[in-house]
Structure formats: C-alpha cells, structure tokens
Image (cartoon, rainbow, N blue to C red; front, top):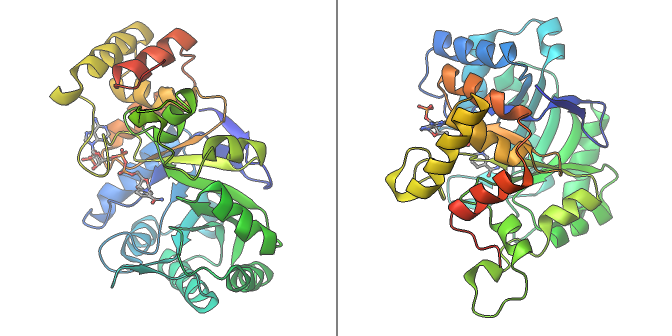
Length: 311
Ligand SMILES: NC(=O)c1ccc[n+]([C@@H]2O[C@H](COP(=O)([O-])OP(=O)(O)OC[C@H]3O[C@@H](n4cnc5c(N)ncnc54)[C@H](OP(=O)(O)O)[C@@H]3O)[C@@H](O)[C@H]2O)c1
C-alpha cells in the first residue's frame, strides 16, 4: 500500500482509504471483518460523516460499537468525519453552532476524544466564513479536531474560507471515478465550442487548484457510474470500458476493482481513493490498485473507453 505524508499534516496516509457510509445495517462481526481486512492490506484511514446511516451519527456509532478501539488502537488509525449537511430539510449549515455541535456528536458516537480531520461536507450557500473560522478555532484549541478540510468545494469557495481561517485546508473530497471524472475530462477539452465535455462543472480547475495548494483530493464513489446509480464494473452499458478493464486486470494479474482504483492512484496528483464497499474481498481487491504503474497509454485508453474525448 502506497503511503504519503498528507501535506500540512503529520499524518502518514494510505492512497486507498475506507468509507463507512454503508455499514448502518451490518452486524458487529461484519463491520469488524471489513475493518480488519482493510487494516491487513494497509488501510488505516477511515472516512465518516455525521449524516451516514439514515439517522444522525448512526454509522459512526456502529463503527465504534463494533470496533471498541483501545486508546492505542485509536492512535494507530486516522479518523475523518464531516459536518455541514442537515438532512431534515435538506439544507446546509456552516454556522459555528451547528459545526461544533455536529463534531461533539461525532466524538460521542465514535467514542473518541478527537477527529484527525473534519471536512465541511457540501458548500453552504449562506456561508459566513467568520463563523466557520470561529468553529475551527474552538475545535482546534480544545483538541477536538486536529486538521480541517472540505468536500465538493470549488477553488473560489476554498479561497474564501481560507482567507478567514487560521488552519490550512488539507483535503477536498470530490466525486471521481473513470466514468465520473468531469474535472479531469474538462481539463483536456477546454474551450471547445459545442462540446459537452468542455463545460466547467467544478468552478474551474479544481484539481490544479488543489495541486497548487497541496490540498489532497479524496475520490469518493470510485466505482459508481454516475450519482449513486450503480457501479460501472460489469455493467453492460459500459461494455467497452469493461473490456479494457478486464484485459488490463488479466495483464497485471489483479481484479477489475484494482484497475478502476489504479486509474485514480496513477494520477500524479497523489489522490486518495475512498472505497465504499462493505464486501471485505472487494476492499482487498481494490487495495491492489494502490501502486499499479498504468502506462500513459493504458490510463488514456481507460479514459477514452469510458466515453471521454481526447481531442
Ligand atoms: N463527500 C461526499 O459528498 C461523499 C458522497 C458519497 C460518498 N462519500 C464517501 O465515499 C465512500 C465511497 O462511496 P460509495 O460507496 O458510493 O463508493 P463506491 O466504492 O464506488 O461504491 C460502493 C458500492 O458499490 C457496490 N458495488 C457493487 N459492485 C461493486 C464492485 N465490483 N466493487 C466495489 N463496489 C461494488 C458496493 O456494494 P457492496 O457493499 O455490497 O460491496 C457498495 O454498495 C463512502 O463510504 C463515503 O465515505 C462521500
């Protein structure tokens, strides 16, 4: 498993991490097997959110109940969570009061005294950056949160926040898979009239912005075709892509999941892949994609087979 020091932090992080969004209905034993499988392949970084699991803090709670981490086990892992979405509505809330209350709920549910990283989950149209700064100062000073980041944010939204924050933004979690790679695809087809791929959907250059500022991009839903409508792996609608994936999987003697993972880890931006599977074998198979040295030709072949143009 490839590891790197996350810029602006002391965290040694793997480039494939485990998201726990889908564990609400799993038994303690199933959660333990999932997490132990992840640990065995080098994944010691876990992604949560206050809203995962149907009721607030449900998945965080299930993780802690199943794992019962000792203090020393807790220190061996990186726990990240998110705040800022109010599902009863829905609406977004980046007020200081909401963010602090959410983190306190996460700490209680996770049975820990600190989050290693807190992400602001989705941009709040009514954001007051001074309020976010107040929350971050309080959470940082009290030791409840060590580092801060964002999710689904544009370059300008990050700049606005950063102008008011004393703490650096260390991560931006964005949806990214071979088939949902709009912010990469737009970059290779910039300024082409009448070309759908040229449409800017990320505020403009989010990947380059994150690289310039050493903000780690975390790729969520790495196997989903689009927005939660199923995976592209083995899906007949993506026959051409799957043919290339299967050929490369045979060539590198790994699973298709590993090739789909490698398409993200091969990118020089040093992104992290956030797996969401609850199947232990799929975690292990995907982890094999941490360091596969796809060639440029192979990386672009996957990209083209997913339907993107290389003009
Ligand atoms: N920041 C955000 O806005 C945001 C949004 C969504 C998610 N996330 C994070 O990203 C993580 C991953 O999201 P995700 O679960 O949508 O991503 P994913 O890893 O692309 O999808 C996993 C889902 O696909 C299913 N699946 C079916 N075939 C599969 C295969 N061959 N390989 C792998 N999975 C297969 C899995 O089922 P099984 O469980 O049965 O294997 C699971 O339901 C979440 O846990 C969460 O931490 C963040």
